[in-house]
Picture 1 (spheres, rainbow, N blue to C red):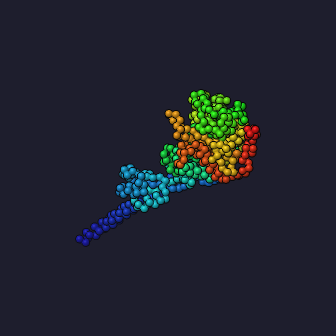
Picture 2 (picture 1 turned 45 degrees about the vertical axis):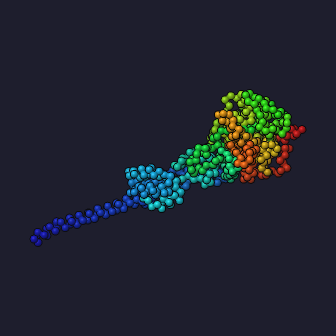
Length: 550
């Protein structure tokens, strides 16, 4: 037996040792493999970086003084790894405890696809949401870092700035218009907007809602010599970080994309066109005591003028006579009227680059009826942006400019088109100053800033005709009248006073415009004018004023 045992041990001893070692090695491999799987696919997967293609950081947007309006930061988004989830019900419950708006059925279906290792759940998380999700302790969550577009000033200039998609592609506003430039990164996009003036404008429109039950509003502030847009607002405001979640009515940029019949703020254009055509003199007098029939329309004044029989051209503007405006239009005829309005951009025309605005709705036939109604601001629907540009010639000596939205704006390189003589511009500006001092624009006066302007109250058109209970009220202004620097337009849609009954522009839009000017002028470095200069004799067009007084 001993002789037999020795050879047996020599054969099986080493083999058994190798088998045991192999089994131990296999067990070790299994343990290590499982640990690796848990590490890379279990609850701690959230610590792993997510591979992303390197792209340029989207460029910032700043205002004319360098204040940050839009920027890009690194943020976190939530994804899940269905293949690493053992109990989908627990994970769904955890996620919905933070995001109750997410569908339980949709999340459950997502977790059930065990072939997937990555699926988005919610993009663009806040720090608070990340912490709340981690505190749930559920498995399979992935927190991926990715760029997020943020707007430090919240709703400020929201409509004009617009917003991007979750993947950083411009969808609306400046984000869309200048998308190619912004995606390249590099130097910030510097807008002509002044954030401080924008804040004033938006705050006054918001305050207007406290005084008036209104459907919407628009405000625009333009620099006279360059057309630079210093502020542009549409109310109700939107938060660009919400990426268009507001309803369609709120999303509409009324300043650019709405078309409105703006009422009597057209009357200065009617006067200017007739002066340029040589069919009107500032000293002419008109009988506005009775309605006048022109074409198919009978033109009436909604309120009596201070003079019983004859009134001056200045009075037609100051007290907003429809009869007087229609009579002036009759002198020049529809062709001359239409030609002039085309010159000032109200019948179409857009800048080659930058923001575009809604095309006008013009009368189907520019006949005597259209001529009469357009003379006082009915029958021709335009965007507020298109209209505000028509007041620049009154302020800069007769030249029409297109708006500028991006800095730098070099006055020497701005394209200019003469649309009226300097004398006509000065004469009409003088008349608009009288409208504020003595007429319907009194509530727009901002002490020390010599406001010149015109009120407009237009009934809104409906399929059944004009509705007297639904109005667009507006005020277009230039200040200071003796040395014009800025044009302001305020438009209110269906502004109904919460107390009282006065809902014409004299008590709504004019008052808001005056508040905007009083607050914005110092921010725009406009020096106040001594009160002694706020007289007819000291204003542009003084010769015309003196002629009227004789």
